[in-house]
Length: 450
Image 1 (tube, helix red, strand yellow):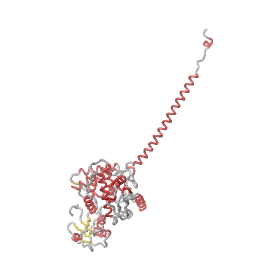
Image 2: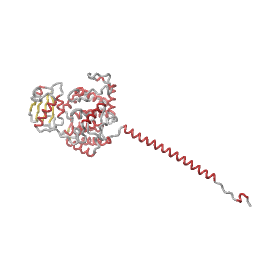
Image 3: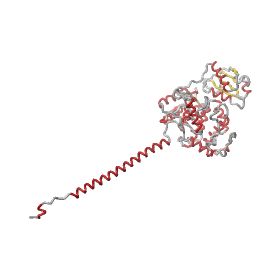
Image 4: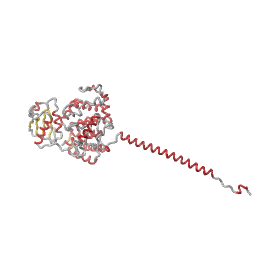
């Protein structure tokens, strides 16, 4: 229980045989349970200390007081593991954290989408495979703020510093509306004012206060679009979180808000380490970050490419497992169809790509293009009015303005011409009258002076 907060009553140990992902899959099922933490091990000798033998018993629960109880799932599948652990939790009257009113991972009556609408969304996303969606970026922000960070009972030391760095980077590079950006700025300042510790509960209270103050103008969408899953439990928040961090690294590389090339990667590393709900996933990410030398990126563009390569490594490792969505299989991105120039040669369907197979200059430009705020798709957004106008909207307004300007100019010239004509006519009439006037002759003028 070292390093765990006081809410944790049990640690659930899951034995994961080598070359399987059953442990990771099981962990993901129990992310929202505040009173337990699920950990996996492939070391049977270590598992044996918790009465796990790898055949009959593959799960064990460990209580704070040291009690160990082994369990034997009926089948060697993540679903069977899940059902076994749920049975234990039910016996202990432990439930998952109830979703908050503003929870991003639940559907309110106003955001429920039926199967027909999901099918339409999936069709749209499959047709535009490399598109980045505004809705997903916002869902990632909502998920981190409303679901992940408030779960921490105490935030102090390195964890508090990680929160402050994450919010500072989010303040610089978030994709939200004007009100949303103001809210993030205030939230970041709130976290910085706490120099010793901050509770997740206090963080959540401040967050709700700020959103209430901003009204309904913070988030434009409350559902996943590009990260929608074809089945429950697939893609969703994790997918959107990757999208958000890609977006942030690229915005950092195109803006001059910081000279630090590691600003976003450092924020991401700290967030994943201390706040990401899947502790096993967080551990994997940290190991990969060390292996791939995350701190050895001297430029912002190299930070962009580091995250791209790291994401592809994760995709390759998880491709084909139970978390892979059959309609959105994990691939090496971008595909040859999305960006032919990014590939030095067309890869076969079965081949794995090495770093030398990529044209990284084209990859970098491709990533910058699809994450350009002007090209972020607003398909599925509920409230367009709160977002900054797109270039197309501004162009349309300019065209309308130009039309009126041309009309005004035309009318002005016409009126000017009309006035000139009227002046000329008036002058001529006056001139004619003047020339037609003759002084009447008098008799004395005709007869001469007498």
